Structure formats: C-alpha cells, structure tokens
Length: 620
Image 1 (spheres, rainbow, N blue to C red):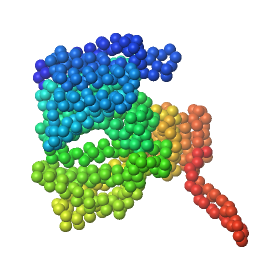
Image 2: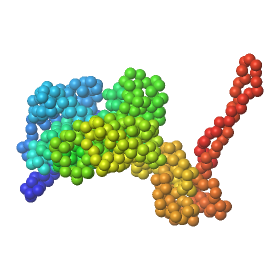
Image 3: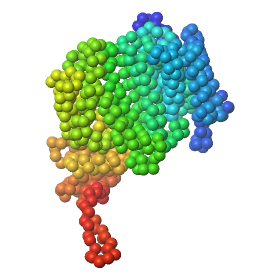
Image 4: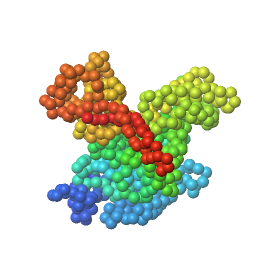
C-alpha cells in the first residue's frame, strides 16, 4: 500500500468519524425533544431515556464524507436516504410490518433496477433483478433485527465494512472501498456513545440504511474477485453471516413454534446467548467474534483457487449449519420438541417432523459432511493440486459417495443419538459408521463411477470419523464454552474425580441453570492432579483446599465420593465452616418403589407387588 492511498484511507475514516461523533450530541438533544426515545417508561426513576435517533448522524457522516471525496453514487443517495426517512418515520409512529416491508421493497427495487449494476446470475434478467431485490431486502431487515444490544449492530457492521473495504483495496476498486471506509469511520464514531449504558441507539433510521449499504457493497465486493465464480456468491454471505444467520434462525424457529415471523420477540441469537448466562457485553463480543471469523473466511474465498474453494465450501456450510442448529435447538430448552409436536399444527408440525422426528435436517448436514470428507481426502492425496476437470469429476462422484455412505450411517446407529446428549462414549458408533462407509464406498466403486484408491479410502474414513465426532459433540462443546464466559453466582468444587464426580458435574451443569458452574475437582489420587477429567481439571487434593480457594474462590463443595476417611471428612467440614462454603453430598441410589395394583372386579386375588428400580441422583 503506497503512502498516498494510506493517507486517503485515514482521511476518509477520520472525516466520517469526526462528523458522526460531533453530531451525535445534537442528535441526542433533538431526539429527546421529538420524543424519539426507547421505552422511557421502563427506565429507573431519574434516569435519562436512551435516544433512538442514531441513524441520522451515522448516515449524515457517510453521505457528507462520500460527497467530500466525490464518491457519492446515485444508488447510495436513493437507497440510504429513503431508508433513513423510513426509519425515522417508523421510530416515531411505529409502522405496521407490512407497511414497512412494502416501502423497503420499493426502495430496494428502485435501487436494483435503476441505480445498481445488474448482476448476471441466471440467463433471465427478471430473475437477476428479483435475486438482487431479495438480497437487499434481506440484508436491510437482517441488520435491523440484530440491533437489540448496545454496540451489536454497529460492531457487526464495522466488521463487515472492514472486510468489504479490504476486498476493494485488494482489487483496486475505489467505488467499493471508499464507501466501506466511510461506514467504518461513522460506526466507530457512533460507538463512542453506544457503549453500554448507551446514551443513543441506532434505531430503524440507522439499521435499515446500514443493512442496505452493506448488502449492496458486499455484492460489489464479491463481483471483484477473479479467482472463482463461486466467490460472487460466497463472499457476500460470509461477510453478512451474523445478521443472515439470525434472520434465518428466527424465521425457522418462529414457524416451528406456530408464531408469526413478523412479531417482536426475545428469540434472536443475542437473546439466546443471554439466556445461556452471558452478559450483554459478552453476548456482543461472541457475535462480533463470529462475524470476524465469517469475514475472514470471506476474504480467504477471494484468494483461494476455484478448486480449493470448492473443497473448502462443505466445511463452511458444515460450521454454519452447526451454529444454526445449536441456536435453533435452544428454542426447545424448556419444552422438548416432542411435546411441541403433539399440539403443533400446519407448518409448525411439518418443520418439527422433518427436523426432529424424521431427522431430515441432520441428514442434510451430513451431505455436506460426506462431501467435505471425500473432497478433502482427494485433495490431501493430490497435495491440493487439483485442476478444473478433476474437481468437476469429483463433484459428479459426490452423490454416489453419499449414496454409499448413508446406509453405513443407518446400520451403525449414527442417527440413533440426539446431538445435545452426545458424549465421547458415542465415538464407537461413529467409528463403526466411518469404517463401514469406507467399505461401502470401496464396494460401490466397483459398479458406480467413483474413483478411489486405498489411501483415499483411509483418509476418507479418518476425516469422516472426525467430522462425525465434531458435529455430534458440538452442542455440548459450544454450551460448555459459552458456560465459561457466563457469569456464575455459584461456583462449585467437586470432591472426587471418579464416575460419581463426573455424574455430579453433569448434574450441576444440567440442573443448576446458568448461575452455577463447576470449577474443577479435588481428588485423593496424586496422579490425577493437573489432569483433565471429564472435561474439568483436577485442581489438587483435599489438603490443597485452602490454596485452591485463594486462587479460585468457590461457594459450594460437592462431595461425590463414598469412601472418604474420617480425617478427610473432618478436614473438609472444618474448611467449609471456616470459609462459609456450603457443603453438600451427591449420591446415586437405587430406590425400590412399591405400587399396589387394584384387585380385579371378579375373583379377587391378593394385590400384586411391583418393584421398580429407580436410578435417581440426590443432593443431600
């Protein structure tokens, strides 16, 4: 990057930053006078209401900066200005969803038809225009939907704009990178006042035009790439992955629960993160981290060769599907989908049947898994030196490989488990399924157009097993990772790292809500100290309780071992009493339940006694 270009980038970003930051105090005053505030009745007594007028300074900074640098195209003036006015109107009088949707579609259609360059995705112009309009309407609403926490929409928008600007700079396209840099400067200036507790929020007046600008620029950024025709499709989606994923998740889960898609609700991705115990700040950071990963993959897609991009595509689809399925599954945290299926009607019942009863969604995800394993095995075998004709041949073979693999999964019981309850003990089923899939693919290559060698089959089996394990155990891994970020009011140290200790840790994780966290184990076996047992570290022995408490204070000691000596039990009791730590015992008993059956009406006999063994964990 030459010095002149660097100075120009800094100048554009600085001007947009200064205009946004300097105009926001005036926007706060104007917003309060106009009554554009967010839920003033819900605020604590004496607190200033949050102004819902941040869109005006953001868009003003972007438009003025672009005009100053002679880069203000007609599509930005038309779309951004129109959506800004629509957003202000909606913030003021709250338009009905269908009214807002009609206005958005009209503005996006006018921009796509009369201002933006036509993109040739299909042989039919009408279809190309329809795809462009659908994309712009989707991104316009998607950014608006994630604007639910302070700095969330601005942070995700900044990440997307940085990626688009980088793509524009790499391909020397000022019409792409200059507007993107201006967006970055304006959003950073806005975030100076939007950090929690925010004094001003974006509102529809900011989120709607921001989604429109990012959507249009993402399309242009994807069109710049010359490495692969896939990049025009992959880059925009990856850059906008967080708002698009949220929109898709909310739409599907609302349909699955029989709700209207347009209704308001606390079921967005950030709300689900909050339900897992994250703070507002942590939820924003998680969403922004996902956005950074998506944007980085989008930039990588502009560099990879066409053949390697095809190999990487199934893995991107797989990762996205795992995140989406995990987030959707949280919808049924309090009520299992089987119960919801009992009273669901119409579309809700159809979605639940396909997704949970018939496992269609899982099978669809496995198609990406099988494709990724097969293509990656071929790529590894050929040191990633695959030419165009070869990758075309491999793509034609993928359906046949899947056809041979699915029966192996069914026979080995891959589809018998439920993802949220999968553990490492299920690995044997996945290993059997992977090996059996290798055998079936080898046999199928005798009669079907599949070109494999022994080394490719071995690589395919290894990759298949690892992908099966990673996807199936992903729900628990994500939950545990998020749990480490959650704020726990109750921290538990488990005494005993054996089987009962593992059951105690699982019991706390499952039944303690998100305010309880296991910090680790103490155990009498010195060889276990410092090791990971059942996903938690053995922090020391009973003699180390004091040092463990000083390093990581906890509020509860959970005894999960039956053979403690009197000395150890006395040491634990004395420590708990001195530090004010709650002391509880976890045990698993087999209780016998007796139930008397009613005597028959004719020829009465002595009542039968039924002994029912119940395995129930108890906290004493």
